[in-house]
Image (tube, rainbow, N blue to C red; front, side, top):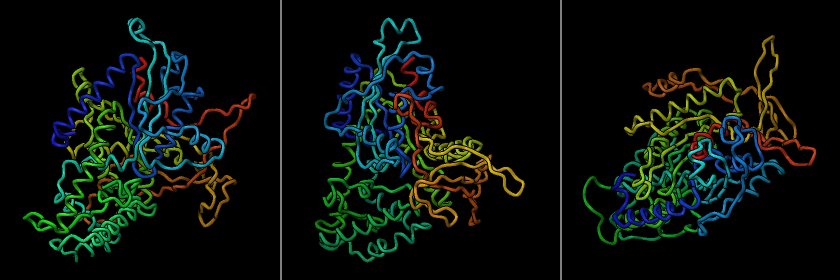
Length: 491
């Protein structure tokens, strides 16, 4: 993060935390892996499948340490941060494997440590390395990550940018009630708690409407308005952007002054502690995105996903850590942006989904003027809920995917019960994503996105071995993601 986002005191505390982490790492080498994602991208499923495949000898041909047989043991261990809730892996994997339901979404931060015993591929390393690596998985909502840019914005900038965005496209309809209240508010009047609460409620309702499945918009700070937790009803969450004059400052005791003070409190009480205690201590990061859902919802959802990725990537400083930088303010030296739910497409479109997401990331990088080193893009499915097949229709052979739709899922007017399988033609993505972005940038031209059938499938039914042990969770490219994120630390 740019230095302006933290104070001298924050920097000192960050340096102290990093020094403590590195000291502990001399005894027990550790990688802190941040896992986040934008709305409904599958963070919980990703972590559960990753851990389950490591613990149960999953099929991981592209994860070299396992494929070469150098990993001798894998186990869960107590996490190092006692004040952070544990990621409830056992509950989530039970939901996936036994109940065949998708686990609940991430609503707060959690952590899990998984430790691998391995033999280094280098004889030199075997002399000096204990042959053990702990991976501390830090799971946090993507909405919290999108809050970090607020640290560099004052209340005026936040208000201007939020109102400008709220008056564009479909957001103008969703924000109508809140914007009307903002227009009518006398910002110089004496602060009134009920007025502040009404404005904050209307603003939060607008953000929730943007996040709904029908819209699937992604750029929605402040994140705690969507996930308030134990801060629900607190003054730090009872504020809203205001329409401010071009110049001047807030009159003492006014509604403007109250909102400005609470906005600063939100940054101080909510955003800064997350940055200092968690984000600034990460070594590697994966950001999960549901690009298929955005495509399915239309041009504005795709453009908003790009906007969110721009804000997200601006939070990172990918690059190699030196000894000094790792002690005082380490970099996240590898960032993976993963487009999830690749199993909702035929394999012919997997590379196309990856190419489309890569172009989104490249455009985001260009907008913020950063280098792309240390940033990778993949299309994955943490849990493969479908299999591929072909059907013949009107003399043509069509590729389809086969799975069990969720209970009450409707496809072509037919409602399913959660037990019956069906074949679905998933649609095609374009071979070259360039036309899509050229269309999005066209002046007022009508944009026709590719038709993709986004169906909610149940998790797969896993066969059992002769001993009654269920096989590991099937996936697409999860092993490739592991290799990029921490395979080098097991070399």
